[in-house]
Amino acid sequence: MRSILLVCTANICRSPMAEGVLRKLLADSGREKEFEIDSAGTHDYHAGKPPFEKATQAAQRRGYKIDHLVSRQVTPRDFDHFDAILVMDRGNLAALKSIAPTRCKDKIELLLEHGDEHYGKDVPDPYGQKDKAYEVALDMIEDGCRGLAAFVTKAPAPR
Image 1 (cartoon, helix red, strand yellow):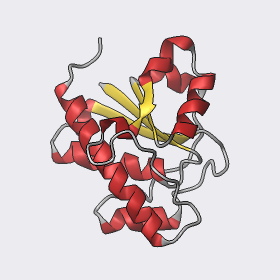
Image 2: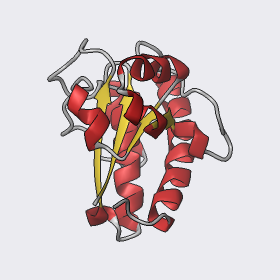
Image 3: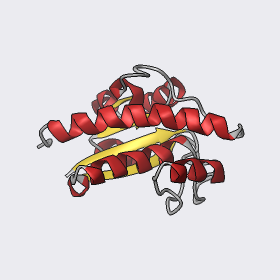
Image 4: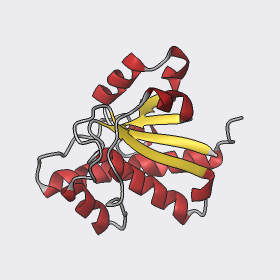
């Protein structure tokens, strides 16, 4: 099994939306059982809580189920456990690389390194903003997750 961790700041908006999108893309391809997908935050601001309501609503409008997810903070174990760690923005990237063991730093990258339309960009944090901000973030997340799903379903499993 291959494992992917999706990370944002508090794990209540962007990373749970990304988890929902990636899970659905893999399920639609019949490959979901080959992957372990999880999400976490760089901070524990909302640990133990469900995704923010506006994130859940935006995801549901597009057919993604995320209301069952529970926020958690990245743990030291995550760096060795996950094969890939995809972050939503450069702030998350810097935060994780500053605490990751050297042997794990190369598996941490921006989600949108896998995007086409939004390649290399940061997914803006919609927390506290209007519904439109969640739609914009979800557009970008879908772009990155489509590319990521295509990549991981073609790449051989790690040994």
